[in-house]
Image: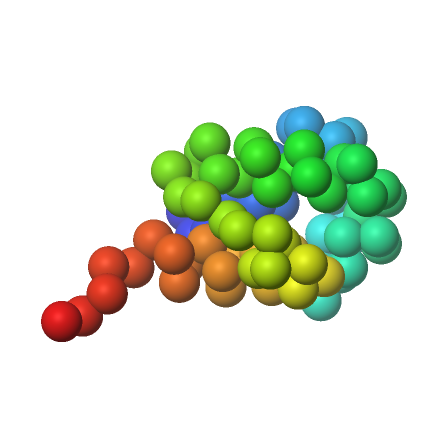
Length: 80
């Protein structure tokens, strides 16, 4: 299961989002998640994926695709 699919399932489960509205380009607002919900969603994403999202990163998250991209970036170990 890829990151976007996991996030979509999390949005449906945790926030009762309409699965029909979940598309790669759907904004968080399109899914009916308000500003408090976004914070809760990010906290949940951090728990599920074992990552830490800082405030500057969180401010730029507008869609599930944005979140998926950030999760994948944070989960990939840096090449040295």
